[in-house]
Image 1: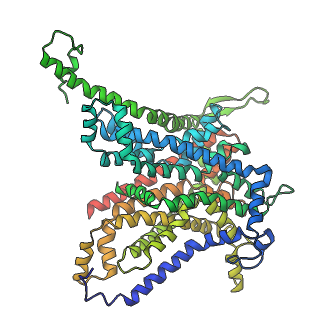
Image 2: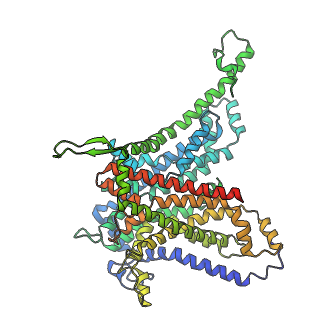
Image 3: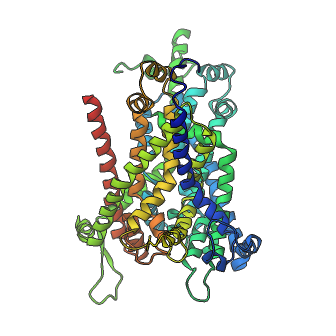
Length: 288
Length: 324
């Protein structure tokens, strides 16, 4: 703006200082990721020699082949399982959250405040804190070591309900619902054809948050799943890391590093391509 | 609220003897009731899963924490479950290792959370300043660690600090410094660094979006009054984004209480890291050892601690807010 001509000349030096501070901070945040990228192109021996932040013998494709063919290609299964848990869990939880959020925002009924307060309290209950109790209960119900052990808990997202309620209250006009009722549409039809469509950008955010939460979850699946073939990629890769120094089955370091790097790719892509939905969710989080 | 609408008790049968006026009133009154039923139908899937997957495990865990397996003297018959009262709690809290894990989490929280949030606040304020260049790039750079799965970040850092592999210790060696980032004394700092690296950007983004809702005219007016950039940040912006700061603090406190991934993964390169390093880690090991009652007890203790700390913090800032 042009309101401060007298002070505008001053920031010269401080501007460079600010830039310097921000640059140092970005080195702190980016350098480790750069190291991971470089490391995934190196041979196992190359990892222990030379500059960790610059390329040595280029072995990325060899590393990738090793990752994807190891143990009869179990890495593919892990990626597939992660996709199954994340897509399935996030899909169901988004629909359930949309329905619940819409009901909490657009209907008046007894117990509404109580329900919403319960949802708010549950947002504060961290998933890992719940993982051990879920394991204790699921082992009693013989659900441990099945797909359901991870899928079922992934289907509930109090944060999703919270977001969906905010968006439904803000974006679905009462007049639109009333108009639908006057036209004789049933409540379910109004929800499916009007509300869902109006809420859809917000629901992308809900889906995204839940997808990421499931894809990155580690404690719950590592507790629940002992079977290699059911595990998501986070558990698989950490399992390889733990085996890296053990006997004949030892997993070489370059394989662990590359496997870790590859498992992050889907999320980084998702994050970069859907940035504005991320920010929408985080902003809503800071409203209350 | 005390007067029941006439429609509630009136007969719903539209073909009844009532006048047309009563009939329409009945319909109007019945609609909210059927709407409430629709609302419940919409809520049902969530409530069902929420009850089954949030409330039930919590209840079951509290229940489990009150029982204990008693094995018969010879160990021939199956162990029986007996009521233990608060016995498990006495056992858990009497275990110096578990107490140590609670203290460790408290200490990490006390040091790391304020440092991280201060860093996040400073970065957010710098990004918010009008003259700052390359904002988009910096925002993306700071947020990138959060886009990485926590496990990948932890594996990456475990190698960045592992003796023999770490480029950091190698660099220190060049300067003639012997540094071991996985020694007993350094583990706390190493884990604190992993958390700071992973979560600063997330907190910064929340604070930054709160800053963007501070009206620009306020800062402009302050500039006219001769207020320095630092003064504007400290006296105007920070007080206005208090809710965001409170929120990030509470989330960070809870996040620290549930610490598991980082120590568990660091353990793979630092065997000296005790396998009961944090309370969740201890509970995990109790599960592994098939001691479900102890695992339940430790989970309850940890949940209570997280609850007390986050509510305690909320109360603290509330009182201060009232005094101001």
